[in-house]
Image (spheres, rainbow, N blue to C red):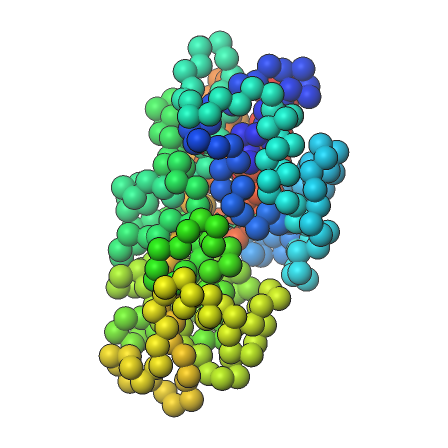
Length: 355
Ligand SMILES: Cc1cc2nc3c(=O)[nH]c(=O)nc-3n(C[C@H](O)[C@H](O)[C@H](O)COP(=O)(O)OP(=O)(O)OC[C@H]3O[C@@H](n4cnc5c(N)ncnc54)[C@H](O)[C@@H]3O)c2cc1C
């Protein structure tokens, strides 16, 4: 998302960008996402939801997202609907195939299964999508109790982070944080990453493999902190136990019962709570075993509001820009739209690389 937005914007401004795409198809995680590109309705809410982020970067996303959304529409991207279904946020849901096609058209030269070898006088925009696909880096920075399932494209293995560090970049805060979902304990194909997500911790009793409650605070709307806490439990897994009443609750247009059925259909473990190896309170009718899955890392390279990668002394590194999940400091401490940050900072990186 970030790399294609940067290239399409650079070409629009008269540049001659080349996108080096490691994967066999363009679009990265964006192409398999729900593709809702959103921001909080107020900047104060953004700050409250993501208190660890850099306010100057957050301000850029907040102020420039609406222009970015208009720009995507101007490229001919199909809109699915103009709302997020969440009263805290505003945004647009696009059709990911159409978004990919429009951005590739705008970007011009996209080389698949290619790696970049830029010459010294060329500006480089790092946009490799974070390091969630690299178990060693996830173990180093996120330090989960067990390896996390991957709920993202498989090519984002930290190349941008590595390239930035090699050139003297510094890291943002929140390197241990990630955005993800608790998923059924089965091999879920990428086409089911959205539908198989188990997003009802708020309606469940959440226990670890020893039968202990481990959530320390009320569950937030995004449930990001539930997944991060699950990652620290034995096996990076948990049980969601629900009552009959909870099964009828709705979350984002689906019932809990639907989500449990999807877990079962995906081959996940769904039990009668009395079959669990620890005692459970009366009244619970289903137990679903979930595993923490990582969608993207939240920490990354430190940039300024012009998407310039910063060195340890806070100065920008000549000719080096970064955007998307390669960058940290935007949704630190909470959750904000990764696609929005990729769109806004992709465009900003292009504008500054050409100035
Ligand atoms: C199931 C799912 C649902 C989601 N739903 C939403 C949503 O509704 N709203 C939202 O805001 N976010 C959502 N996201 C997150 C969103 O997709 C990401 O935040 C966003 O794609 C990040 O943009 P990016 O450009 O950093 O990474 P990507 O879009 O993943 O692009 C990174 C690209 O870099 C390529 N790459 C990696 N390494 C190299 C290398 N060494 N050389 C060249 N290329 C390389 C990858 O192949 C990939 O194409 C979802 C993600 C998933 C998986």
